[in-house]
Image (tube, rainbow over all chains, first blue to last red; front, side):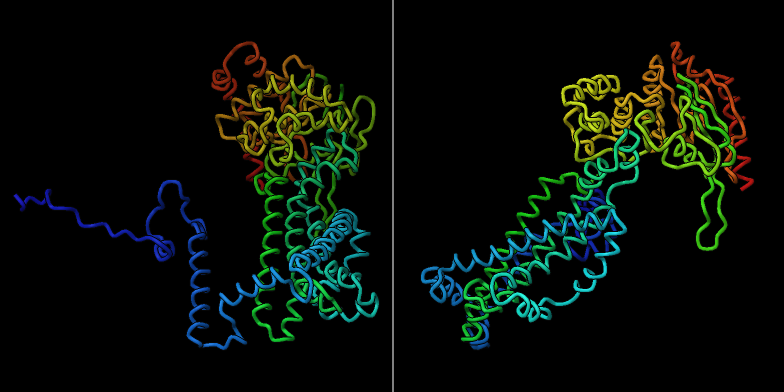
Amino acid sequence: MSDNPAARPAAPVVERRGLLARLARARPTQPGEIYGVPGAGETRMLSIATIAVLIFIWWLSTTLGWVKPLFVPAPQAIVQDFVTILRRGYTGEPLWLHVGISTARVFGAFMLACLIGIPLGLAMGISPVMRGIFDPPIEFYRPIPPLAYLPLMIIWFGIGETSKVLLIFLSVFAPVALGARSGVRSAAIEQIHAAYSFGATRWQVLMRVILPSAMPEILTAMRIGIGFGWTTLVAAEMVAATSGLGYMVLSASQFLQTGIVIMGIIVIAAIAYMFDLIMRMLERRLVPWKGRM
Amino acid sequence: MSLQVIDASVVYPGQRGRSSTEALHAVNLTVEAGEFVVVLGASGCGKSTLLNLIAGFVAPTAGRIVLDGQNIQGPGADRSVVFQKHALLPWLNVRDNVAFGLSLQGRGKAERYKISEHFIEILGLRGFEDAPVYTLSGGMQQRVGIARALTCDPKLLLLDEPLGALDALTRERAQELILRVWDGSGKSVLLITHSVEEALFMGTKLIVMSPRPGRITHTFELSFSRRFLAGQTARSVKASADFIALREQVLQIIFADEEAA
């Protein structure tokens, strides 16, 4: 009876899952997946695990005394610093004020950069005259690190808010203007020709075809731009600031308060990330058609 | 409505030392009111250049394009164009895409929607007015494109391979729909296509063009669409002996051009 080959259980099918199976990819995909899509798959769990492992290694190395607290304080010490500063403030100013003033500087500079950069970028996209005039200065200053022209800002505009906001403005301006400029080319020639064949004027084509088509690229540029803004914040607050997150990090580093430095960095990262989430949400709301036509 | 293309030539200047190309050479063509003119030819024969010329996107190097006694000076709402794809505006829903031309003319919202309503109805888009256009199938998107061109009430409808990207079945349905919409509208149509069958089925006049330089080599008067509109089914028209005979004749002309290349 047991000799009957049909009754014998089939040889177990070796299930190959995960990264190696994806790389080898000898077999067809499951229904619902698309064969051969590069980089397909969920990453959330892996990301969470990575963060957990990093924090664990951090905690382990500080608890076992591998590194001195002066270089890397323990995670719980950072939390402690955060709670303390949340309660008592830093250098006499409450934490929300530091956060508020930095956000105001970055966001103010960002708004200004969008207000000037987007129309200018669009103008550069549609007019060879504008492109000819503004391309050299923008391309010239764009790759220069803001720290390099920070002294000039101070010499020209003093140590007040102007030079701080201007420094951030300059770092946001170039990506936003260049994004708007290349966004002009997003409209398909068929869309433009169709509009003209319905009797559109040049101005109508610009406002009702080219500008809306450029929106996805403009929003992406704004997202990149505000990221640059936060990147430049600390440099901007090197200029005789008495408040702000960048100032907090800089002055804490002078007193070797490593915990506060790290905490400040985390707060800046968190706010910047929040701004990015808001921009992504705006993108979904304003241009749901992005990449779909 | 009467359109005359008179001895029109288009020469594209050569770039970087290459010699210039004559896309169209001394083309003569007349489109009368209510005519359905189909242009057919091997690739590179200047079909699209001819359409661009009539649409007003390209100026003739020599010759004239006259619409109702006036030389054409650039594009205008009396000659709406329907493209193969990419011409709809994805940020507008179906209704606003259809009404787009009217809105460019500054018509009020109520009036726009009232006129659009009619074309949404006859092109079978009812129920999809509020849908974003990028959620529609290719066939429906083309119907939106045609409805949009018709709301402008053009004298001449220019169709630049509008069905080229559709699957065979959808394409036949769309051909029938366009013929029904055209029938009795009194409008003139100029259709560019790659499909000989489509050309013979839809046109009242067939223009066959040849490349290098682009020129008209043959003209046929057609009546197959009349049979369809008189009640015969599209398939039986396309399967009739005289249809097949003419189809093979035209195919031979075009293949001869392709081989000569």
